[in-house]
Length: 155
Image 1 (cartoon, helix red, strand yellow):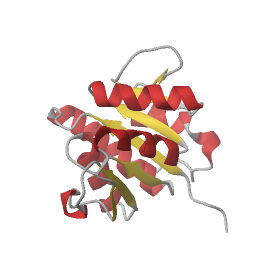
Image 2: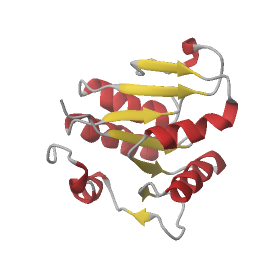
Image 3: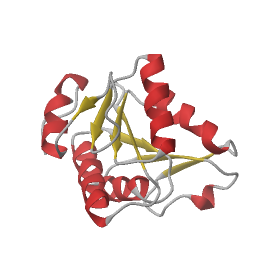
């Protein structure tokens, strides 16, 4: 059996409604294409992407910073409590096949930096514009860019 694609989705814990809508659509499309979402499991972009994926029947792994699985947003299907704080960002990146950064703050930047350091592809929708990161306009363009990852078409 072929392993499913693990799509890392990262971004700020507190976001505007417009950014949350983009994250939700990204989560939905990735799940419908067969990917498993890997995220930080809390609010903001993480919650919106989790919700989009869950509503599409997908699977969400939430790598949590604290000691309790109860901290996960309600859309996470598999919470992982690390009690590692921001160090859990390395686990998210290491687990994912690629990273999609949507908006974001310093924590998002750390995830991008780790991904670039270990050679993971990073796609950005309105996130950090730095060398090595592929800027993507919207969820449609993201799914086109991900065609080489074995996802099942564009839902």
